[in-house]
Image (cartoon, rainbow over the protein chains, first blue to last red):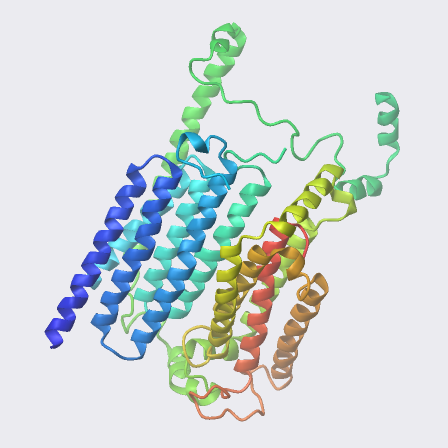
Length: 106
Length: 84
Length: 315
């Protein structure tokens, strides 16, 4: 049972790190701001979820598990909002945005 | 494991410090400086001083980066922003 | 006209010129050039060929000076780095028992610290009891820094032009009706959590890692988040320049009074007649808890003050 827990934790952390590596490669390979931000935001949410879940398994189920869950809640609230604000800033300030992506007029 | 971390993190610290001085744009320098602070806070944890690590993460990575970026905005040094 | 101005300028006394300089009136030598700097000349610039012989000679001399300067800089840098490396190699190992930092002072602090200060967290006992005067100096430095920033960046009649007034008015209008709904909803959830976490870190300073500085910074960043998401107008309902002044100076005065009492009783560590309590409880360790709260308030106000002065020029 103990071994299963540790192995599951290691696998989850590895998956999270893989997501992070993909996000970093995307961050460097894409050219336009919104594309790069998409990659970075994915890494920030999915990657941190897997890494923290893996840490929960590794630490065992006690008070620290609750703290890690709170960290996940905080990051899932804070990080998409900051990405949204960055995207909004890009949308407001970049004049030729229609040449880069589709824009739906309200 | 710990030895590897203790070797890698100071090396990253040196790389960050050099990158801050050699980068051409001031905004890039500020961003690298905040990452310097984050690495420094991890090193404080490794050196068993969590007090300093919390303060470094809050002040170095959070507030001082914010203030530096606002300073750049104030002196019109951000590329592509013009208040005139 | 220029002659008149010149005569007028000569008639000014030194005091008047100093006043003008303090008010930012530097007509003869502008602080910042109004025009943007000329674009840098690239290598393909054709103007380069039209240089006269004399200027080219000067350029060569300048180049020679520049190369000497660079060589000297590299030499000095290498020498300093060598000295530092040699010194670092001779330092004792980190954490080894026979390095000079381990002496009777450290032994006394480690052995008697819990008993004398009542703080489980040794660091808090050190900086807020044995070395409380140092921490008082640090908080005063923060207060001084925010005072200097206020002097430099505070908006008033003398240092704002009409254009800047118009700009701020426009920003106020934009702030009024363009609130980002996602940001405000999330901020309503996150700001109380951040504030409570900051208060937790401050109040637990003598039990777990943390304390006034880190907790104060967390509270300050919560205030900054409030100002970002809801605007300065709503912020000014509960936090104005008057509140800032009162709260910060009261906190510093409480700190100074408790330290002055310890000077009065012989400038040993921060003695108090408050019972120390059981180590590990929140209400324990005498004055450390109160001093932590003071430092936290000063740091939080300072962080928010920096932000407000840098962005808007007003508190």
